[in-house]
Length: 217
Image (tube, rainbow, N blue to C red; front, side, top):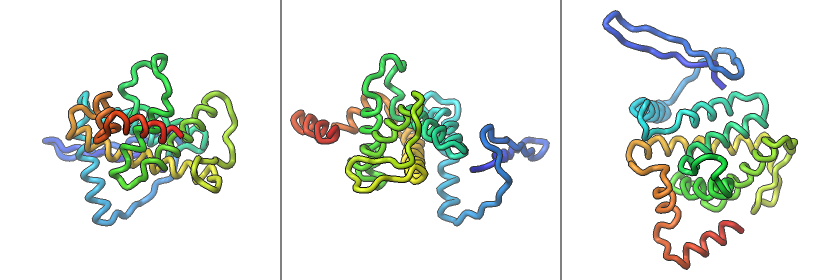
């Protein structure tokens, strides 16, 4: 986790520096050394997010806020809930009010699995993990206890809860990073039309139904 961030602002009077403390757990200050590849990636991501600030077609601020909070949490239960809130804001932005939504876990997992395929993830594996994560989150949110081990469909061994949260962090991070660029370049990104075109691209009606049945299983 990080303690906060420093913002540098230039004006006709010179340069001012503002320290912004994180609002979750407090951490000691740390120094970080970034290699050139990581530095270029951070600059590109930061520039894309700055250019979208305040625009309607941009990554929802709750995505970044909840993802940052998830990494800072001392409680794994809270971390899982925050991760899924960030994922919901990205993958279910078009779903309307919570009262009008149906089969959220399936819809989120299906979209995430397909969305992350170009990022190197296997569609079916990402779908199964995201679906399980949503189920775990729902259990926690309704007062259930967090299990020490998580069983994921298609895997022979159970996953330790700490490793499960680490893997969840990777999925959500990859989703948000890819989404930042698409919000800047794709006018209909995150709309219902975008997700339908993504899910059923190059599939005829019969193939679409088969895809849904296989994925649901």
